[in-house]
Length: 161
Image 1 (cartoon, rainbow, N blue to C red):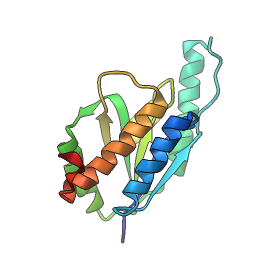
Image 2: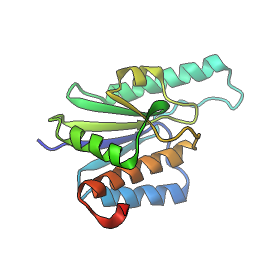
Image 3: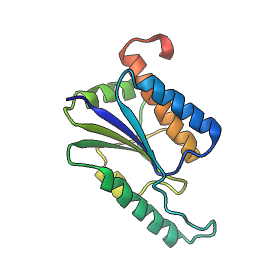
Image 4: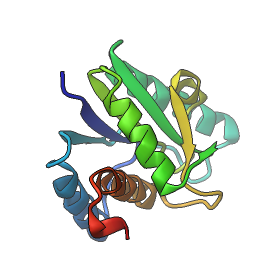
């Protein structure tokens, strides 16, 4: 059984430069592993939304994400409070996950208000990209680039050097 990868972006990749970057990295990853992008699971909120409204939106987004998953899948959430890994450590984790025998690896990046606790509670791994805050479109692009980098590290491709 071959592992499939699904990159889940709560928000849509709207800006052209991020879309072009995503398309490029998805194309680069496909020779290593089948990958798809799911986006646009966000719940619209007012710019002046109260904290309780934002929490409710995140909860609904979390439910949408979890509804995509089946029992034979791995869930990796990207959250600033997660484990910090080097690119080499991420590559080693990817290698283990590929060998897991599971059907799919889901990589989830939250929207502009963050990621639902429902998702992080269900996650098999929680990884931090950085202690910095990134726009969600950029974070999704960084995840795609780091996934490509992980495969090149595993295959001793010169991209990482």
